[in-house]
Each structure stands twice: as C-alpha cells, then as structure tokens.
Image (cartoon, rainbow, N blue to C red; front, side, top):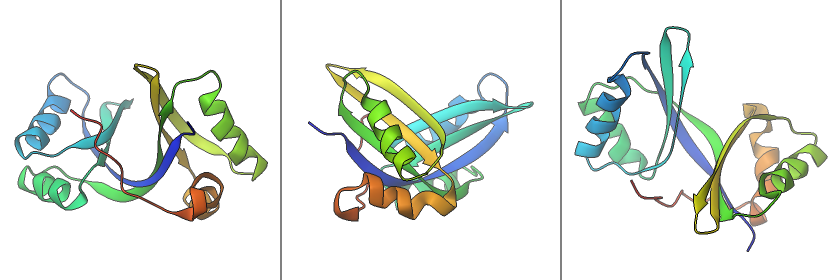
Length: 148
C-alpha cells in the first residue's frame, strides 16, 4: 500500500527547557480532550520548541487559549502514514528531489505492526509544488487521529 500523505497545519509553542514544562502543555491539552496527530519537541537554546499537529483545529485553539498556551501558527507540513518498508522515506524524498524541492526537516518512526509515520517540512514557498508532487490529485485532507 502506498503511503498516505496529508498536508497538515501545525502550531508551535516555546517553553523553558526544564522538567515539567512540556507536561504542562500536554496535560492542558489532554484535559480539554485534544487529540494530536503529531508532536515534535526539541531544544532551542535555553528554551524548547514543541510543534503540535492537532486533529481538530478549533478544539485545539480553544484549549490552548484557555490554558494560556502561546501559539505560533498555523504553519504547514506533510503528515505521512504507511506500511513500513525499506526506503519508504527515501521514495518521498526522491519525488521532492526530482521536483527540485529541498526537504527542510523530517521526523520518522516505525509505529509497529508494519506501519510507520513521518512529518516532513519544506520551505513555505515550496508547499504548493510539494503538494502537487506528493498528494494524489492535489487533494488535501485533515489528519487522522493517531491515538494518544
């Protein structure tokens, strides 16, 4: 089965890089019933950036506002889900390369039971072209909840 690629909206927040700060964000979203399709966190100097791909934008934004989580975005990325196989991400990177599109960043993980997931970023100026390359018939669909 071919990978399912979706153009998604994500937001990020920046928190102090110390124990418990990410937990505060995740617990506030959990208590509000927010489902996330993807989460990426990484250090940024003395702070940490947390990228969040919500399954439902309205619920997510309302929960973040209520919890006083300062968000930046929305921004765009590609969420990829498919059968795990050797070279799965290489095939997608090759398609973008052939279209002269540079991959800015990618995070991928084997999800178990023969599946994998990834999130991939390109420069904003390349999003439309990348969507034409990666999305079947240029159809953009909302992400499916991956579970919490």
